[in-house]
Length: 409
Image 1 (spheres, helix red, strand yellow):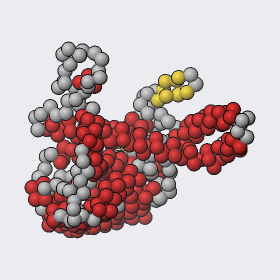
Image 2 (cartoon, rainbow, N blue to C red):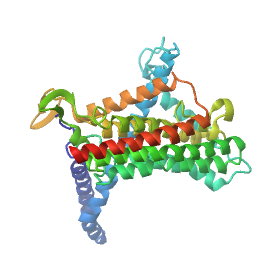
Image 3 (spheres, helix red, strand yellow):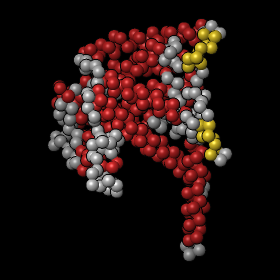
Image 4 (cartoon, helix red, strand yellow):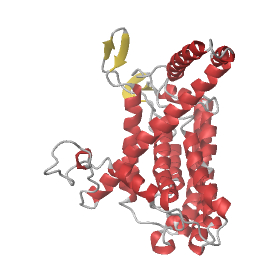
Protein backbone atom coordinates (compact mmCIF):
# COMPACT_ATOMS: atom_id res chain seq x y z
CA UNK A 1 0.00 0.00 0.00
CA UNK A 2 1.36 3.41 -0.91
CA UNK A 3 1.74 6.17 1.66
CA UNK A 4 0.31 9.70 1.48
CA UNK A 5 2.56 12.65 0.81
CA UNK A 6 0.54 14.69 3.34
CA UNK A 7 -0.59 12.33 6.14
CA UNK A 8 -2.63 14.90 8.09
CA UNK A 9 -3.71 18.01 6.17
CA UNK A 10 -5.78 19.35 9.07
CA UNK A 11 -2.80 19.08 11.42
CA UNK A 12 -0.50 20.86 8.98
CA UNK A 13 -3.04 23.66 8.49
CA UNK A 14 -3.41 23.99 12.26
CA UNK A 15 0.36 24.32 12.69
CA UNK A 16 0.50 27.02 9.98
CA UNK A 17 -2.43 28.90 11.51
CA UNK A 18 -0.84 28.65 14.95
CA UNK A 19 2.43 30.09 13.62
CA UNK A 20 0.67 33.00 11.88
CA UNK A 21 -1.44 33.74 14.96
CA UNK A 22 1.66 33.65 17.18
CA UNK A 23 3.37 36.26 14.97
CA UNK A 24 0.25 38.41 15.03
CA UNK A 25 -0.03 38.16 18.81
CA UNK A 26 3.59 39.22 19.26
CA UNK A 27 2.93 42.32 17.17
CA UNK A 28 -0.23 43.04 19.15
CA UNK A 29 1.54 42.66 22.50
CA UNK A 30 4.27 45.00 21.26
CA UNK A 31 1.54 47.61 20.70
CA UNK A 32 -0.21 46.84 23.97
CA UNK A 33 1.96 49.32 25.88
CA UNK A 34 0.66 52.49 24.20
CA UNK A 35 -2.74 50.84 23.45
CA UNK A 36 -3.73 48.68 26.49
CA UNK A 37 -6.99 47.24 25.01
CA UNK A 38 -4.91 45.52 22.33
CA UNK A 39 -3.64 42.99 24.88
CA UNK A 40 -7.15 41.59 25.35
CA UNK A 41 -7.54 41.30 21.58
CA UNK A 42 -4.30 39.31 21.43
CA UNK A 43 -5.59 36.89 24.08
CA UNK A 44 -8.83 36.43 22.13
CA UNK A 45 -6.91 35.84 18.91
CA UNK A 46 -5.07 32.93 20.51
CA UNK A 47 -8.20 31.24 21.89
CA UNK A 48 -9.15 27.75 20.69
CA UNK A 49 -12.36 28.75 18.82
CA UNK A 50 -10.50 31.34 16.75
CA UNK A 51 -7.69 28.90 15.95
CA UNK A 52 -10.20 26.20 14.94
CA UNK A 53 -12.20 28.52 12.66
CA UNK A 54 -9.03 29.86 11.04
CA UNK A 55 -7.75 26.30 10.52
CA UNK A 56 -10.95 25.24 8.77
CA UNK A 57 -10.86 28.37 6.61
CA UNK A 58 -7.29 27.63 5.53
CA UNK A 59 -8.16 23.96 4.94
CA UNK A 60 -11.08 24.78 2.65
CA UNK A 61 -9.01 27.40 0.85
CA UNK A 62 -6.15 24.97 0.20
CA UNK A 63 -8.28 22.07 -1.03
CA UNK A 64 -11.14 23.81 -2.84
CA UNK A 65 -9.49 26.95 -4.18
CA UNK A 66 -5.91 25.88 -4.85
CA UNK A 67 -5.75 22.11 -5.37
CA UNK A 68 -9.05 21.98 -7.25
CA UNK A 69 -8.34 25.01 -9.44
CA UNK A 70 -4.83 23.81 -10.35
CA UNK A 71 -6.18 20.41 -11.36
CA UNK A 72 -8.99 22.14 -13.25
CA UNK A 73 -6.42 23.99 -15.35
CA UNK A 74 -4.65 20.69 -16.03
CA UNK A 75 -7.87 18.92 -17.06
CA UNK A 76 -8.76 21.83 -19.37
CA UNK A 77 -5.31 21.60 -20.94
CA UNK A 78 -5.62 17.82 -21.36
CA UNK A 79 -8.94 18.12 -23.18
CA UNK A 80 -7.90 20.96 -25.47
CA UNK A 81 -4.65 19.24 -26.47
CA UNK A 82 -6.21 15.80 -26.79
CA UNK A 83 -9.13 16.75 -29.01
CA UNK A 84 -6.75 18.81 -31.13
CA UNK A 85 -4.60 15.73 -31.67
CA UNK A 86 -7.72 13.68 -32.45
CA UNK A 87 -8.48 16.25 -35.18
CA UNK A 88 -4.87 16.18 -36.43
CA UNK A 89 -4.11 19.66 -35.09
CA UNK A 90 -1.47 21.01 -32.72
CA UNK A 91 -3.99 22.79 -30.52
CA UNK A 92 -3.16 25.45 -27.94
CA UNK A 93 0.55 26.40 -27.88
CA UNK A 94 1.01 29.57 -25.80
CA UNK A 95 3.99 29.04 -23.50
CA UNK A 96 5.79 31.01 -20.84
CA UNK A 97 8.54 32.18 -23.21
CA UNK A 98 5.95 33.71 -25.55
CA UNK A 99 4.85 36.16 -22.86
CA UNK A 100 5.94 39.81 -23.30
CA UNK A 101 7.73 39.95 -19.93
CA UNK A 102 9.87 36.84 -20.58
CA UNK A 103 13.43 38.20 -20.23
CA UNK A 104 15.22 35.71 -22.50
CA UNK A 105 15.33 35.27 -26.27
CA UNK A 106 13.55 38.55 -27.02
CA UNK A 107 14.76 38.82 -30.63
CA UNK A 108 13.30 35.54 -31.93
CA UNK A 109 10.73 34.64 -29.32
CA UNK A 110 8.83 31.48 -30.42
CA UNK A 111 5.12 32.03 -29.91
CA UNK A 112 3.93 28.77 -31.47
CA UNK A 113 6.16 26.03 -30.04
CA UNK A 114 5.03 25.68 -26.44
CA UNK A 115 2.83 23.14 -24.68
CA UNK A 116 -0.05 25.59 -24.36
CA UNK A 117 -0.63 25.33 -20.62
CA UNK A 118 -0.90 29.11 -20.24
CA UNK A 119 -3.58 29.35 -22.93
CA UNK A 120 -6.29 28.75 -20.32
CA UNK A 121 -4.95 31.62 -18.22
CA UNK A 122 -4.85 33.87 -21.29
CA UNK A 123 -8.45 32.99 -22.15
CA UNK A 124 -9.51 33.74 -18.57
CA UNK A 125 -7.88 37.17 -18.70
CA UNK A 126 -9.60 37.82 -22.04
CA UNK A 127 -13.03 36.91 -20.64
CA UNK A 128 -12.52 39.14 -17.58
CA UNK A 129 -12.04 42.12 -19.91
CA UNK A 130 -15.25 41.43 -21.83
CA UNK A 131 -18.58 43.02 -20.93
CA UNK A 132 -21.16 41.10 -18.92
CA UNK A 133 -24.42 41.64 -20.78
CA UNK A 134 -27.81 40.97 -19.20
CA UNK A 135 -30.72 40.42 -21.63
CA UNK A 136 -33.33 43.17 -21.50
CA UNK A 137 -36.27 40.91 -20.64
CA UNK A 138 -34.38 38.48 -18.42
CA UNK A 139 -35.03 37.81 -14.75
CA UNK A 140 -31.91 39.65 -13.64
CA UNK A 141 -31.58 38.13 -10.15
CA UNK A 142 -31.96 34.52 -11.29
CA UNK A 143 -29.83 35.14 -14.36
CA UNK A 144 -26.95 36.33 -12.17
CA UNK A 145 -27.39 33.72 -9.43
CA UNK A 146 -27.42 30.70 -11.75
CA UNK A 147 -23.67 30.64 -12.61
CA UNK A 148 -22.82 30.98 -8.92
CA UNK A 149 -25.18 28.12 -8.01
CA UNK A 150 -23.77 25.92 -10.76
CA UNK A 151 -20.12 26.54 -9.83
CA UNK A 152 -20.56 26.46 -6.04
CA UNK A 153 -22.55 23.21 -6.08
CA UNK A 154 -19.70 21.52 -7.95
CA UNK A 155 -17.06 23.02 -5.66
CA UNK A 156 -18.97 21.62 -2.67
CA UNK A 157 -18.22 18.14 -3.98
CA UNK A 158 -14.48 18.65 -3.47
CA UNK A 159 -15.01 19.45 0.21
CA UNK A 160 -15.78 15.76 0.77
CA UNK A 161 -13.73 14.03 -1.96
CA UNK A 162 -10.51 12.68 -0.38
CA UNK A 163 -7.35 13.05 -2.46
CA UNK A 164 -5.53 10.55 -0.21
CA UNK A 165 -5.96 8.92 3.18
CA UNK A 166 -4.97 12.20 4.86
CA UNK A 167 -5.72 14.90 2.26
CA UNK A 168 -9.34 16.00 2.57
CA UNK A 169 -11.48 18.71 4.13
CA UNK A 170 -14.04 16.54 5.91
CA UNK A 171 -14.22 12.78 6.41
CA UNK A 172 -18.00 12.31 6.54
CA UNK A 173 -19.68 8.98 7.25
CA UNK A 174 -22.34 9.99 4.70
CA UNK A 175 -19.80 11.50 2.31
CA UNK A 176 -21.03 9.69 -0.82
CA UNK A 177 -24.59 10.85 -0.13
CA UNK A 178 -23.36 14.43 0.29
CA UNK A 179 -21.44 14.23 -2.99
CA UNK A 180 -24.44 12.96 -4.94
CA UNK A 181 -26.69 15.63 -3.43
CA UNK A 182 -24.25 18.42 -4.31
CA UNK A 183 -23.66 16.97 -7.78
CA UNK A 184 -27.40 16.96 -8.50
CA UNK A 185 -27.83 20.67 -7.71
CA UNK A 186 -26.13 21.90 -10.89
CA UNK A 187 -28.90 20.78 -13.30
CA UNK A 188 -31.33 22.80 -11.19
CA UNK A 189 -29.12 25.85 -11.77
CA UNK A 190 -29.07 25.03 -15.48
CA UNK A 191 -32.87 24.97 -15.56
CA UNK A 192 -33.02 28.33 -13.76
CA UNK A 193 -30.42 29.77 -16.16
CA UNK A 194 -32.40 28.61 -19.18
CA UNK A 195 -35.68 30.00 -17.88
CA UNK A 196 -34.36 33.31 -16.52
CA UNK A 197 -32.73 34.37 -19.81
CA UNK A 198 -36.18 34.61 -21.45
CA UNK A 199 -34.89 33.07 -24.65
CA UNK A 200 -36.44 30.14 -26.49
CA UNK A 201 -33.09 28.43 -27.06
CA UNK A 202 -31.98 28.71 -23.45
CA UNK A 203 -35.41 27.58 -22.22
CA UNK A 204 -35.36 24.45 -24.37
CA UNK A 205 -31.82 23.71 -23.18
CA UNK A 206 -32.85 24.12 -19.54
CA UNK A 207 -35.89 21.85 -19.97
CA UNK A 208 -33.73 19.22 -21.63
CA UNK A 209 -31.31 19.42 -18.70
CA UNK A 210 -34.20 18.87 -16.28
CA UNK A 211 -35.39 15.84 -18.27
CA UNK A 212 -31.88 14.38 -18.26
CA UNK A 213 -31.55 15.01 -14.52
CA UNK A 214 -34.70 13.01 -13.84
CA UNK A 215 -33.68 10.23 -16.24
CA UNK A 216 -30.11 9.70 -15.07
CA UNK A 217 -30.10 10.69 -11.41
CA UNK A 218 -32.29 7.68 -10.60
CA UNK A 219 -29.97 4.99 -12.06
CA UNK A 220 -26.96 6.84 -10.65
CA UNK A 221 -28.40 6.72 -7.12
CA UNK A 222 -29.50 3.09 -7.57
CA UNK A 223 -25.97 2.13 -8.65
CA UNK A 224 -24.61 3.78 -5.50
CA UNK A 225 -27.23 1.92 -3.42
CA UNK A 226 -25.94 -1.34 -4.90
CA UNK A 227 -22.40 -0.35 -3.92
CA UNK A 228 -23.52 0.60 -0.39
CA UNK A 229 -25.30 -2.75 0.00
CA UNK A 230 -22.08 -4.49 -1.05
CA UNK A 231 -19.68 -2.39 1.06
CA UNK A 232 -21.87 -1.42 4.01
CA UNK A 233 -20.48 2.13 4.08
CA UNK A 234 -21.09 5.60 2.65
CA UNK A 235 -17.69 6.88 3.74
CA UNK A 236 -15.38 7.47 0.72
CA UNK A 237 -12.24 6.75 2.76
CA UNK A 238 -13.63 3.41 3.99
CA UNK A 239 -14.71 2.42 0.46
CA UNK A 240 -11.19 3.04 -0.86
CA UNK A 241 -9.60 1.12 2.03
CA UNK A 242 -11.80 -1.89 1.26
CA UNK A 243 -10.44 -1.97 -2.30
CA UNK A 244 -6.78 -1.79 -1.25
CA UNK A 245 -6.17 -5.54 -1.31
CA UNK A 246 -5.76 -8.31 -3.92
CA UNK A 247 -8.61 -10.51 -5.11
CA UNK A 248 -8.89 -13.86 -3.31
CA UNK A 249 -10.63 -16.54 -5.41
CA UNK A 250 -11.20 -20.04 -3.99
CA UNK A 251 -8.46 -19.50 -1.45
CA UNK A 252 -5.91 -18.32 -4.04
CA UNK A 253 -4.60 -14.75 -4.02
CA UNK A 254 -4.63 -13.27 -7.51
CA UNK A 255 -2.32 -10.41 -8.62
CA UNK A 256 -5.38 -8.29 -9.40
CA UNK A 257 -6.56 -5.42 -7.18
CA UNK A 258 -9.98 -5.91 -5.59
CA UNK A 259 -11.48 -2.88 -7.27
CA UNK A 260 -15.24 -2.96 -7.41
CA UNK A 261 -15.11 -2.31 -11.16
CA UNK A 262 -13.59 -5.81 -11.57
CA UNK A 263 -15.89 -7.64 -9.15
CA UNK A 264 -19.59 -8.20 -8.61
CA UNK A 265 -20.24 -4.46 -8.97
CA UNK A 266 -19.06 -4.26 -12.58
CA UNK A 267 -22.66 -3.69 -13.75
CA UNK A 268 -23.13 -0.90 -11.21
CA UNK A 269 -19.82 0.58 -12.38
CA UNK A 270 -21.00 0.72 -16.00
CA UNK A 271 -24.38 2.21 -15.04
CA UNK A 272 -22.74 4.81 -12.81
CA UNK A 273 -20.19 5.78 -15.47
CA UNK A 274 -22.85 6.25 -18.18
CA UNK A 275 -25.00 8.25 -15.75
CA UNK A 276 -22.03 10.46 -14.91
CA UNK A 277 -21.40 11.17 -18.60
CA UNK A 278 -25.00 12.32 -18.86
CA UNK A 279 -24.69 14.41 -15.68
CA UNK A 280 -21.62 16.08 -17.17
CA UNK A 281 -23.57 16.87 -20.37
CA UNK A 282 -20.84 15.50 -22.57
CA UNK A 283 -21.24 13.92 -25.97
CA UNK A 284 -23.24 11.80 -26.68
CA UNK A 285 -25.46 13.26 -23.93
CA UNK A 286 -24.93 16.99 -24.55
CA UNK A 287 -28.49 17.57 -25.80
CA UNK A 288 -29.12 20.58 -23.45
CA UNK A 289 -26.54 22.60 -25.42
CA UNK A 290 -26.66 21.03 -28.86
CA UNK A 291 -25.04 23.71 -31.05
CA UNK A 292 -26.76 22.64 -34.27
CA UNK A 293 -30.20 23.01 -32.70
CA UNK A 294 -29.92 25.49 -29.83
CA UNK A 295 -26.97 27.78 -30.70
CA UNK A 296 -25.24 27.27 -27.32
CA UNK A 297 -28.23 25.92 -25.40
CA UNK A 298 -28.74 27.30 -21.91
CA UNK A 299 -25.44 29.26 -22.09
CA UNK A 300 -26.48 31.28 -25.17
CA UNK A 301 -27.17 34.57 -23.35
CA UNK A 302 -24.12 34.54 -21.06
CA UNK A 303 -21.11 36.67 -21.92
CA UNK A 304 -17.88 37.81 -20.33
CA UNK A 305 -16.70 36.07 -17.19
CA UNK A 306 -20.15 34.61 -16.53
CA UNK A 307 -19.72 32.61 -19.71
CA UNK A 308 -16.25 31.65 -18.49
CA UNK A 309 -17.70 30.37 -15.20
CA UNK A 310 -20.39 28.23 -16.80
CA UNK A 311 -17.89 26.97 -19.38
CA UNK A 312 -15.25 26.07 -16.78
CA UNK A 313 -17.90 24.36 -14.70
CA UNK A 314 -18.16 21.63 -17.36
CA UNK A 315 -14.51 20.72 -16.85
CA UNK A 316 -14.94 21.02 -13.10
CA UNK A 317 -17.78 18.50 -13.20
CA UNK A 318 -15.65 16.19 -15.32
CA UNK A 319 -12.89 16.44 -12.71
CA UNK A 320 -15.40 15.70 -9.92
CA UNK A 321 -16.95 12.79 -11.83
CA UNK A 322 -13.55 11.26 -12.55
CA UNK A 323 -12.58 11.58 -8.89
CA UNK A 324 -15.85 10.02 -7.74
CA UNK A 325 -15.60 7.07 -10.14
CA UNK A 326 -11.99 6.54 -9.02
CA UNK A 327 -12.99 6.46 -5.35
CA UNK A 328 -16.05 4.25 -5.67
CA UNK A 329 -14.92 1.70 -8.25
CA UNK A 330 -11.23 2.05 -9.19
CA UNK A 331 -9.43 1.90 -5.85
CA UNK A 332 -9.03 5.63 -5.24
CA UNK A 333 -5.46 6.31 -4.18
CA UNK A 334 -4.37 2.70 -3.67
CA UNK A 335 -1.19 1.74 -5.49
CA UNK A 336 2.14 -0.06 -5.16
CA UNK A 337 5.01 1.19 -3.02
CA UNK A 338 8.28 2.11 -4.74
CA UNK A 339 10.25 3.19 -1.70
CA UNK A 340 10.61 6.18 0.59
CA UNK A 341 13.06 9.08 0.67
CA UNK A 342 13.84 10.69 4.02
CA UNK A 343 14.30 14.44 4.26
CA UNK A 344 15.75 14.69 7.72
CA UNK A 345 13.39 12.56 9.77
CA UNK A 346 10.39 13.18 7.50
CA UNK A 347 9.58 10.26 5.15
CA UNK A 348 8.49 11.16 1.61
CA UNK A 349 7.14 8.32 -0.57
CA UNK A 350 8.52 8.21 -4.10
CA UNK A 351 5.04 7.70 -5.58
CA UNK A 352 2.56 8.84 -2.93
CA UNK A 353 -1.16 8.17 -2.74
CA UNK A 354 -1.93 11.55 -4.28
CA UNK A 355 -0.03 10.52 -7.42
CA UNK A 356 -2.05 7.33 -7.93
CA UNK A 357 -5.32 9.15 -7.34
CA UNK A 358 -4.53 11.94 -9.82
CA UNK A 359 -3.30 9.37 -12.35
CA UNK A 360 -6.70 7.68 -12.31
CA UNK A 361 -8.50 11.03 -12.49
CA UNK A 362 -6.52 12.20 -15.52
CA UNK A 363 -6.86 8.86 -17.33
CA UNK A 364 -10.63 8.92 -16.81
CA UNK A 365 -10.77 12.53 -17.99
CA UNK A 366 -8.81 11.58 -21.11
CA UNK A 367 -11.25 8.71 -21.69
CA UNK A 368 -14.23 11.08 -21.46
CA UNK A 369 -12.56 13.45 -23.94
CA UNK A 370 -11.81 10.62 -26.37
CA UNK A 371 -15.40 9.38 -26.08
CA UNK A 372 -16.82 12.87 -26.67
CA UNK A 373 -14.92 13.30 -29.92
CA UNK A 374 -15.45 9.75 -31.19
CA UNK A 375 -19.21 9.12 -30.97
CA UNK A 376 -22.18 11.02 -32.42
CA UNK A 377 -24.80 12.87 -30.40
CA UNK A 378 -28.03 10.98 -29.73
CA UNK A 379 -31.55 12.39 -29.87
CA UNK A 380 -33.45 13.51 -26.79
CA UNK A 381 -35.91 10.59 -27.06
CA UNK A 382 -33.01 8.13 -27.29
CA UNK A 383 -31.42 9.68 -24.21
CA UNK A 384 -34.62 9.25 -22.20
CA UNK A 385 -35.08 5.68 -23.44
CA UNK A 386 -31.53 4.77 -22.40
CA UNK A 387 -32.11 6.20 -18.93
CA UNK A 388 -35.57 4.78 -18.24
CA UNK A 389 -35.55 1.51 -20.21
CA UNK A 390 -31.92 0.42 -19.90
CA UNK A 391 -30.03 1.96 -17.00
CA UNK A 392 -32.75 1.69 -14.34
CA UNK A 393 -33.31 -2.07 -14.91
CA UNK A 394 -29.54 -2.66 -14.97
CA UNK A 395 -29.08 -0.71 -11.73
CA UNK A 396 -31.86 -2.73 -10.06
CA UNK A 397 -30.11 -5.89 -11.22
CA UNK A 398 -26.87 -4.59 -9.69
CA UNK A 399 -28.69 -4.18 -6.36
CA UNK A 400 -29.92 -7.80 -6.55
CA UNK A 401 -26.40 -9.03 -7.31
CA UNK A 402 -24.97 -7.04 -4.39
CA UNK A 403 -27.67 -8.35 -2.05
CA UNK A 404 -27.01 -11.91 -3.21
CA UNK A 405 -23.26 -11.65 -2.62
CA UNK A 406 -23.89 -10.05 0.77
CA UNK A 407 -26.36 -12.76 1.79
CA UNK A 408 -24.49 -15.82 0.53
CA UNK A 409 -20.91 -14.54 0.87
